[in-house]
Image 1 (cartoon, helix red, strand yellow):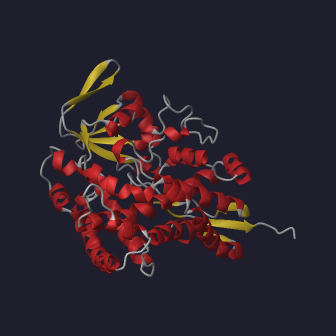
Image 2 (cartoon, helix red, strand yellow):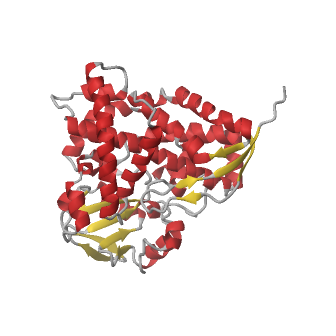
Image 3 (tube, one colour):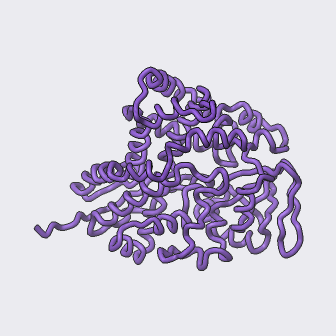
Length: 404
């Protein structure tokens, strides 16, 4: 089975291809030089095993190409996202105190206020462009308030985030990496100035906590702090934007599930199922630090140390051996919380609780605020594989008729 990430039909809907790969060659060696894993258990093993590294630039044994050399020198590699223990463990222990479930739950009333404000104009106009008028501004405002960051340059930050997240694609070339370096170069002075002012006047915000956090004598260096703030700014809103867009498309193409959410509100289990059905992050890369093997039909399929392994979260989320009728959106699914959309193991998404809370409030409010919601046209999708999301979705909304 040929795996072609550039195929337009595959980008539109990858699951028929993944189903075929999973059935014919679940450990799929591609002409592009990496191995694709599509079975749930193989993906989970890869994400949790110490035999696999997230630090691709350090541990992958690959030809020296211009793209790889550029990545190696990139400032992005100092991000916690790309580190292994013990470095990852140290950084995560320093920042995780700001993401406890109780701390996130306290945000619910404020998220509700922001959602109500974002939907106000739609109630008046009968129209909502889902992404720019709702899915982006709410989570962006939430992460900005958490860090106590100004929002006057929201358009620029949105553009920088889009450019930087493009480098997460495994097909990224030097041109995209150069654009990302330019975006980071523009973003750093802006953040440097804010961080410098905050050091002199600490507050009760998350940025102040990150500046002052200390555990067993360890603190964040300035570079680590900068890398984490950039990661927070991007991951803190970008994945939620895509989760809301993907979820609304799923709901509008599944009327029974839409009606169920409208009647009951959006529960945590519903969000889990939406994440499983069409999550915003479809893949993650690993490299084995030792020669390893995966069993297929009772025989070991060897993967050499330093190979590139693409663990497909999206394919794992649709593995029929784990999820019955995986291509069906089913809010009664008992094991929906086993989805892989937040990854697994030590790199399980730090902001998972925040993303789920935002999705619960945003989706519940949106579907319950209007008598009728209809798509005016098919959504426009981002032409990417790793970060999957809607970029534009024009909706017609009919406000609830007051009975007063």
